[in-house]
Each structure stands twice: as C-alpha cells, then as structure tokens.
Image (cartoon, rainbow, N blue to C red):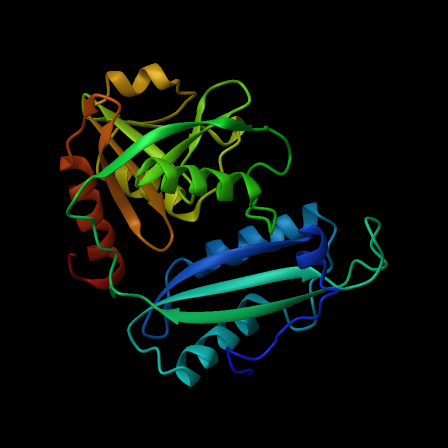
Length: 274
C-alpha cells in the first residue's frame, strides 16, 4: 500500500519509457467489482499475446482480493473507478531484458454509484487527423494512447463532447474512450472487433443484454454515412455504462433505446435504475 502522492514507479519503468504495458478500468460499487472475471480474462489474454509472464500471485482471486483491500483502505464504499495497470519489468531498450511483469492498482471515487445515463446528449464529430491502424494490437488497451490523446485535444479545440475515431479503411471504429453503437429501426449495430475497436467489456455486456431482451444486434462495418440514417447513437464503456449522443454534424438523435438499456444494466447489476 502506497500513498497516492508518493512516487510509485521508477523512471526506467517500461510503460513510461516505451508504452510497454496494458491497463483495465473497472467499475466498483462498494467492494463489488462489476464484470471482473471479464476484465481479468481480457488483461491476461492480452498479456499472453504480448509475451508478458504474469507476476507471482496474479490469479483472478488474488487480484480481486487486492482490489477490495485497496477499496477498503481508501474507504471507497460506494461508486469507485479502479485502474489495474500491468507492465513488463524494467531492463533493456526496445528489446526487453525480461518478460517478467508487475502490476499497480489505483482506486478513486466516482460521482455516481450506478451507471448514470447523461441527461444532456453528447455532441460529436469525426476525428480525421489520424486513423487507427487495424492490427493485432487494435483490440487492446495499451499504455500507448497517443491516438486517443490527440483526439481528446481535438475535442477540446472544437468544443465537442467526444470524437469518433475511424480505422485505416475509413470505417467507424470507436470513441475516445468508448465503443459505439447506432440504432436503426429498433436494431443495434456496432463495429466488429475486426475493424480495430477495443474489445470493450461494456460493449460485450450491452450486446448480451440487448440480445436477451430480444433486440437484433449486428456486429458489422459502419461508415460515416450510416450515421445519417440512424435513429440513435450511443457510446459504451466500463465506467460510465452508456452515454447517448444527441448531435453529429446536422443530424440529431433520440435516446429511447439508450435509456432502456441503461436501466436494464443497472437493474441487473445493482437491483435498481439510474
């Protein structure tokens, strides 16, 4: 346990030097972690792809126990954001000296205990300065986040609430920190993982919940033109749940499906609505 205002890593840390790391952001309510098995499976699967050896004691049970211990230590007994960062141990330059790894957990309070649907819809635009390459790293949440940072800079410069990132084929990919969905004629559409979006935990949960409720869901390539004919447009991520979009260019969207799915998500996880 380390105070948050004390240094936690050395300047030789490979996540700092080379972006040689992964991270998960996890929603907690009290000491209950939402969808933790899925988060653990994702991070360990991606560690394997990057040839990182798990640290000692990095089992699902032990990591969950460490997170709960930290939440209790910080007296975070309601909504909290947990960040689990994993990085290859120091040594070497581009070529690592070892594939052993370490991890760091941080926890901070959230404004809302549940997944809170935004009252005011988001205004968005397409980020066209840099397109996201589709490769074996595309679905990961890595320590190299320059694409999302530059999209965030553009968001601030243009007064938007979020930006839509395109892949290198010009297809809709994701938001700055979220997966995206559109609704047309009561059916849900979201880009497939093969189009380079992050393999979002909330993305998979919304697909599961929507299918359980009888929605037709399609993981299919989407172009900017598809937004022109959409009835609704929303983003999903593990911390916020669902955030609905009201405007893209001159197009305006509704929030009926987003609100319904958000309520169902909260009922399933907390036994109450937002």
